[in-house]
Image (cartoon, rainbow over all chains, first blue to last red; front, side):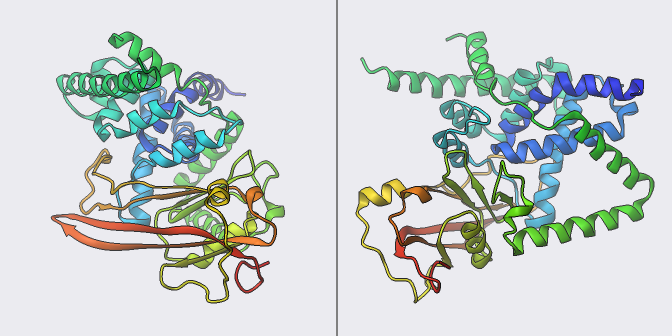
Length: 170
Length: 218
């Protein structure tokens, strides 16, 4: 195995789970997220010499996966892809033992966020990128990243606090 | 709950989500991507082969060609039929241009089914008088509300269409002997609001029917 391939394998081993979670937050479908991440990693492999020099290769993978998602839908139906909240809940209800489901309340709260907020959450929370790198990846100002993250956290707190109150009646 | 605790809760809730594709499979796919870039002619060949494979997957059940771990699974843009580990079958419908295709895939997944658009139900099907308790065991369904423009792509799409998604979970094991399911749905454009096309999705309450070759295929 060449050094480039070893580098890539190491990158894949450390970043694949986080990238999958970041894409899942955005597309809402586990299988589709896996397909998109696989495709993005394959493209990263094909351009590893360039991607490895990227300041945040995992962010490159996530952005490539999300762009692939948009392109895929455009080619077929000229529609905006939408997250399937009910499918996620259905998956949880079905008890997918092969891959433990995400808490449906948390997933539903995330999918209710506006798209840009979800993208920021994906990069800041799941990839642990700093504000500057997130802004560069999404092509927006750092102050906009901060605003989106603050709004997303406020929405999630409202949703999840309500959820906890409903689960534990006084 | 402060910000850090909230972020921890959200992050921890995803710990069960793990990438399952082996790295060598990614590398193989990556080499194919690289080869197509170097020789664009290969892209056409690969695309044609992919289209043929997809057409085969849609037009035939061919369960033997599927890995045993996921019998009957098929992913399409318009709808998805996915067998769940507990034996139930999850149907996600985004449009119903090809009810016969969905019907065939459901039957291949072990659900005796009749699938049509609303108003074009199969006249050969006879309703089975199931109690609501039985129906509740066989079906659970959700129709998502009309989606707001909740997910903008990283670049703007000029004319988005907002369409609902129907999700139906069917438990074949709960079907009374000699019965099948009847599903009828309709997707239709209802409005054009500025640059946005809006559709409605309607799922007629799924029902049980007596299974027969003319109705449910068996």
